[in-house]
Image 1 (cartoon, rainbow, N blue to C red):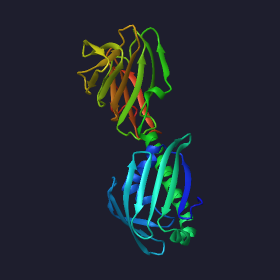
Image 2: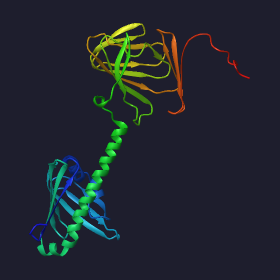
Image 3: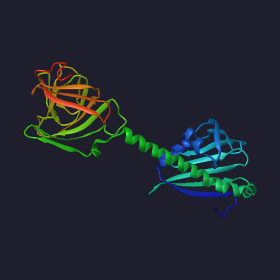
Image 4: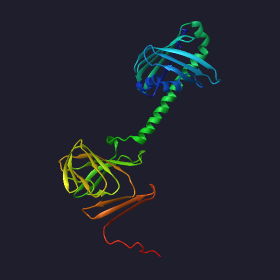
Length: 310
C-alpha cells in the first residue's frame, strides 16, 4: 500500500507469459472464474472487452448476497495494460500492468478510490480481497497450464525431439526412426518418423489386407516401389496406399542424401501382411496391449481344420 490513503497497490509474479495473463482478463469465461475474493462467484450480464466497453455483472457472496457491479474498460493495451473504471459505488479506477519477468509475468495492481474517506473505511476489506483475487488468478492459470501440459502429452509429438533407434540389416536396410503415436490418445492411427540412409530401403516390399497407409516425404528424394512400378519421390509428396493385393509397396532411398518421411497408418486388427519377395506372411491380432498375437510363416500346405483335435 502506498502513502496515498486512497490508493491500494500490490504486485505478483505469475509463472506464465504476459499474453496468457492478459487472456485471463480478455476472456469472459476465464475472468468470471477468478474475479473477486475467495468464495465469491460472478454472473456476467454484459462484457464488451474493448476501449469504452461495458462490463456489467453480479458478484454473489458466500452468504448468497448479490452485489451489482458496473465497470468500463478505459484503456487496453494488448498483453501489457488493462485500466478499469468501477462505475458502481464505491467508485475507483483499477490499473493492471503486465511486464515480462524471468519467471513469467510481473503483474502490478493499482486501485485508486475517488473518495479517500471511503478508501480508509474499506481498507480492511480491499487489501486482503486484492490478494485473494490474485491468488485466484494464479490458481486458474496454473490449472490451465497443467491441463495444457496434459493435453500436449496426449495429443502432440515433435519429430525433432524424438529419441531415434537404428534399424540396421546389411546390405539393404539402414534407418533411424521412432514411433509417434505410442503413448498418445490415438486409438485408430499409428505413426512413425523415419530417416532412411542413402541407397537403403525401408520396410520389405509388402501389402496389407486391413490397414491403410499414408507416407509424407519431409526431406530428400527417393523411389516408391509399388505394384511392380517405381515412382519418383520428393519432399512434399504425400503417398496413399489402400489395403489389398493391388498395392504392394516399399520406399527406397535412391539418392545420396538421407530421406526423411512420416508413416501414418490405421490400426485395424486382425491384420495380415504379405511379403511378395519372400513369400512370407505376418498375421497379427490383439485383444489388448497385454495379449498380442503374431505369427510369421510362409505360404505352404496348410493343416486340416480338425488336425490335432480330440
